[in-house]
Image 1 (spheres, helix red, strand yellow):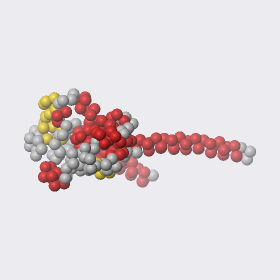
Image 2 (cartoon, helix red, strand yellow):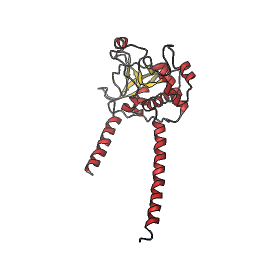
Image 3 (cartoon, helix red, strand yellow):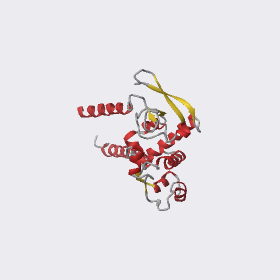
Image 4 (cartoon, helix red, strand yellow):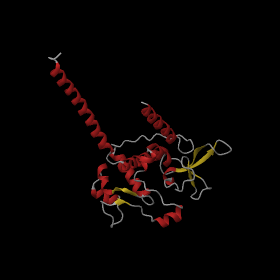
Length: 240
């Protein structure tokens, strides 16, 4: 019993730490649906167009995109730009380590399982929380990841946000839109939800199938338990 209580309190404690990541700023809820194939396809296209330039996904193969409703021809047409890359290959970044370190000071992390380490809410909040900051090397900063090395690759769609400081020591700030991007605020948020949805899928492509199998197993166990109880009752009725 004590062990169970310790485990419960540990989960609650570390969940609280995760929710407070980024200097105490609360995370926005990522309302995503892992069964929405269209959302996953849009997110995959954003990932291929914007993220694969610098980030790799070495645990993810292009042919797994079939699981979200894409054909092999569509994968070749819309996701593979290098003829030397095969559909069965893993997703490698277009940038080499030396160039990446020269540009960003560090090799951009592999994003294969980033959703499992960060969580969907963190990723979504991160994508929508970039703001202009001339004091940084890239000219950008992030609300929940201060002094991040990554620039805002979605600034054209999102527009430019500025930090509004609530205290003199700049310990508390909010974001205010300075210029409008090519997308409305709602459309941009939806696109980042699509990207987050795909990253969650990429972290565990079989998650939805696993949930379906789990549900069937639970139903089977319930039926089996009822049948076992009925057999036991019938078997022992004459004894009692």
